[in-house]
Amino acid sequence: MSFLDLVRAEMRMVYGDMMRRKAMLAMFIAYPYVLTLFFLLIGYALGSPRVFAARVGVRPEIFFIVGGFITMTILGVGDDILWRPMFDEWMGTLPYIIASPVSRIQHYLAIPLPRLVLVLISGSTTVVPVLAYYYGVPGLLDALTILGLTALAAVFYAAVALVITGLLFGMGGEHWRLINVVRPFLIILVGAYYPRYLLPLSARILSYMVPSSHPVEVAQRLLVGGVEAGYALMLLGVATALFLLYMPAGLRSIVFWEKKKVAEGVKT
Amino acid sequence: MEEAIVVDGLRKTYRTKKRRGLLGGETVVVEALRGVSFSVRRGEVVGLLGPNGAGKTTTIKIIATLLLPDDGDAFVMGHSVVREPWRVRENIGLMLTVEKGFYGKLTGRENLEYFAALYGLPRGVAEKRVAELLSLLELDKLGAADRLFEEYSLGMKARLGLARALLRDPPVLLLDEPTLGLDPPSARRIRELVKSLAHREGKAILYTTHNMFEAEIVCDRILLINKGRIVAEGSPEKLKEMIPYTRTIVVQARIPEKPVPEKLGVLGDASISPLGGGVYEIRVRAKRPREVLGELIHAVVGLGGDILDIRMEEPTLEDVFIYFSRGEGDGER
Image (spheres, rainbow over the protein chains, first blue to last red):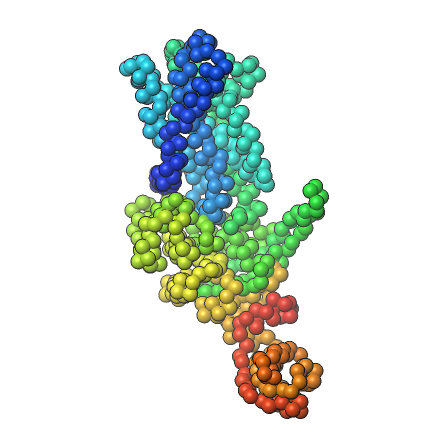
């Protein structure tokens, strides 16, 4: 069985679904702008953009556009994994997927890839035009680097999502609802909307355990005035090590879910 | 003929929680399968018939590797569903509930291509096979091949479901009530295809249905399952011979007062229904119909009645189903 065929099939499924739901497509493009607007409205109502820029190091609209893009990408990729067992059960496709000879691990590795490709599309409608508008050619180069770092963060997040999916769905019953509790915490710990270096110490320590938070920190430091190559490489090295630690656990977790599902009986 | 499915002593118990109030509850143990054994040969359609909760779907799920048995095993083309589920999955085509099971925002063709990839068909082969199946199931003729699944009628969904089961051209098909809720032409098309797949292409087909007419015309052999056990097995004709009565005598007579079975001197399985105008239909199921008919005519005449019509009905598969579903045939096998 070709992994590429599997990826192609998943792409067709995700894009077919997305292109035929116009509201979803519109939301996909508008999401970072909508969130930016939301944060700016609150921000301007409660404080000054100058104070924000002085504290964070970048204008709020730029920070939130980039934060929105990073969050949407990571969430999109993670959600494709986190909600897939539920989605397939709801669509009635789960029994056919379980009864197919495809390796569950291969399948769950293929699932986040279509959304990852969409990073390029969504990036070109958010980060790229905004940074190019404000900073010119250097901004464009930064935007492309941020795109790459975001893709990396999303891949790293996929490993965490695999662990959570397998565990919560494998535990059966209503445990999947805990996804709604875990997800917001992860988003905070990733640090896309609230820079990690501004988090309280305890949250910062937890944040270091989330592999995606490291490329996100590199992207943010790049945004607020540059990052030393050595420090960036160190962060990416830590992220890769964590990813390599989480990935086998994630794959085992998916196998655990499948075994539990078959032991209980797949709903038809 | 080669045995494609061998089921050996399957047992399965479900533990469910019976709720009492908001917090209370007790565990209820349901024995879904109590030592089910049978086999299906290649080129044969075997019907699995039984009332709701008899264990049909549990059996299909175990054979499809969607559920583990507590005890016993099942083999598909020689591979154990417990020890070699991957091998089993390579040899089965599955069709469960008709109305669900596909992605609504994809067309029929896209859905089939998606599952073809999942079943390991290379892209080029998959495209060709999907086109063949869309034509075989007449989905292209119906203009449904490139229509979204969410716009499909139930008949189209059933055809697409069968197409998916055939994607890899597997030697074994597991079809769980494939014609449920279909209009007569769609149901007929599915039945014709199922028979042809078994008899011409040599596939082994396990087929569950509640429709007795369908079971009689589609299945070469029928397994009657009740309360988790196979209570009878054989061809439709053989099953009819298993029940203690061989004929139903139907007498229509005009009788001055409403008769009761005791007055007619007929003991056993009799029913009397008024047809209006003092005419009654008396139905008696009997193993020795000639003797019973003589007694019945004598009794009707004795009550001052006029016999208007007499006919004999062969037992139907429905009679067999009801007989065994009531548990009357327990211990027959």
